[in-house]
Picture 1 (cartoon, rainbow over the protein chains, first blue to last red):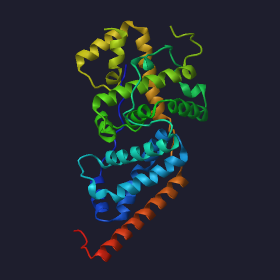
Picture 2 (cartoon, rainbow over the protein chains, first blue to last red; picture 1 turned 90 degrees about the horizontal axis):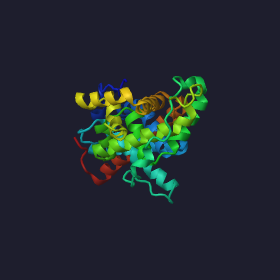
Picture 3 (cartoon, chains in turn blue, purple; picture 1 turned 90 degrees about the vertical axis):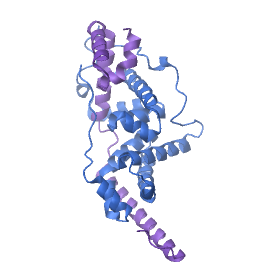
Picture 4 (cartoon, chains in turn yellow, red; picture 1 turned 120 degrees about the vertical axis):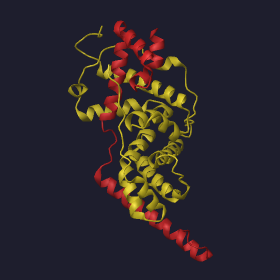
Length: 207
Length: 94
């Protein structure tokens, strides 16, 4: 069985742009915005689950990055540093909307059982044939919304945005084992929840 | 290897970040355990579906609007810092 290969971003002339932006060149910073605004928006909306909040996070995260460029030590990639700022902004917005619930990346994770597969069935090989694009997006959105924020944050960075485990740990200030543990549970919980929509309807229980 | 052992290693297996011997043990388990085979396959599909879904894409008009707002705020910040330096008489950093 094949493995999942992460997306690889080309670093290119990024460090030149960062140096120019640090020296006050706003057009260089605008290039960095163009390079990463889509990623920051996706991350923000995955975490906040709210479009307006995601828009605000994009603006605030880039502004904060610009204001703090002098503090960027270049020990990590600019993107990882930016993601760290964006995740913090997104979690802050989420806390504001849900003050009744503690939202933290360190939140206590439930027992192993919450991620153990309960229903095992083969899936239709082409989900696109079961649902149109709009329906599938709705299912995926609804499904990921049900995950605890700490799980969906790790999942979106690692599996949607293609950061490495180390970069994800760095961006979220988590240990590598903590990232792996949350990622496993996020993947298994999403799989379990998608199962009811995507299981093979023609092949019985798949056994 | 039990199914529980297999699940613990699933993330490293899917990410191809394990030694050859552990990988061989997991693949041996997959040969005879249908449930783990299905869980492994559908978990892999879950990741691929989300990766390819283009969920929460940034529309072009909103993208332009956000970028204009960001640049304008950055210019405002730059001016503010510049004015503050002029007022306090501190030299511009090299």
